[in-house]
Image (cartoon, rainbow, N blue to C red; front, side, top):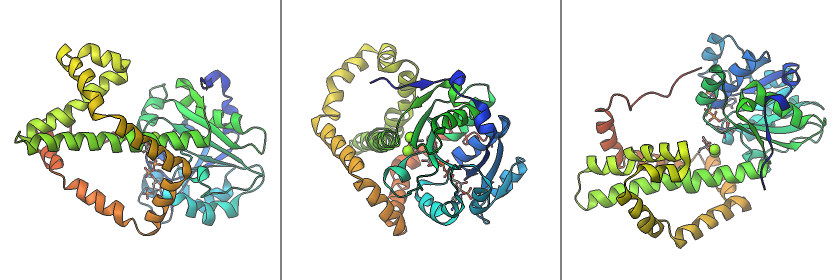
Length: 337
Ligand SMILES: NC(=O)C1=CN([C@@H]2O[C@H](COP(=O)(O)OP(=O)(O)OC[C@H]3O[C@@H](n4cnc5c(N)ncnc54)[C@H](OP(=O)(O)O)[C@@H]3O)[C@@H](O)[C@H]2O)C=CC1
Ligand SMILES: CC[C@](O)(C(C)=O)C(=O)O
Ligand SMILES: [Mg+2]
Ligand SMILES: [Mg+2]
């Protein structure tokens, strides 16, 4: 089924411009939403704990900051852009006591609503505006007069205006310039988790590291293995990004294309597909969310161990050395905030 897509002409900016908007969090997404909404004529305040390292930046950029509870009490629309694992506590302690009928609670990702970690009262609007790109790109595109596509979803429509308000907010951050795709909290959450686990983050890093290990364990130089298994991945993904898999295959040699067709399916085979289905099942049943929340509640022992182990993988040391030879590669993340 094709999704409904909305553009600037479908979105009335005056709806969000008529609201007081609190953005909780000033990280990747928070800074982009807040600055672009302000530039679109919306009254915005940022919610951050007293000790937050981002408070000074917010003030430098001319925005008002308060505690999450203070700005939630002030606002008509609260956009929760703190880390997903922190949202339950912020909601319970700072937002819930400051809700009133007709207010709106917005999210940039559906995890806490999809898995019932946050259960808002029925008399408020609950919606999502989730850019399909990192916050720094969202802001840069807005400043350039363009936009990053967004997903919009409505979980509760207490006022009858929830979708119109979500589209208005999406317009305020440039999303409807590119297109706002209508979805549900369930579809966004489940596909986002599946994509990052099976393909984009989990799948891709395991593929890269395993390829590097096979080559180096067979005696090939780590520098050569790094180029073949990690560095050149960007060239291939850029081609797919620009013109799909067919464009990538058009640009590579026939030798590579033949190896792609004849060997690729031996790597990503029926067993891998079955495992992907299992991973999707764990997401759909809530098993993954329960596991992740329990891990976070326990102080993240596995997460910390895996992060340390991954940082010590030989591919990282090889990469540091090689990126030092390529001045254009090791750039800091573009700061637009
Ligand atoms: N990153 C991305 O590209 C995307 C993210 N999203 C979603 O957007 C949301 C925000 O993610 P992201 O922008 O990556 O988050 P970041 O980790 O970049 O930023 C989180 C912000 O929240 C602040 N924060 C931490 N704890 C609290 C608290 N208790 N109360 C208030 N603020 C707090 C942090 O403060 P401090 O500055 O002091 O650290 C920081 O400013 C998530 O729901 C995520 O899933 C959706 C699409 C893409
Ligand atoms: C791919 C990772 C992501 O889902 C994203 C940037 O969209 C995330 O949660 O960070
Ligand atoms: Mg994502
Ligand atoms: Mg995600």
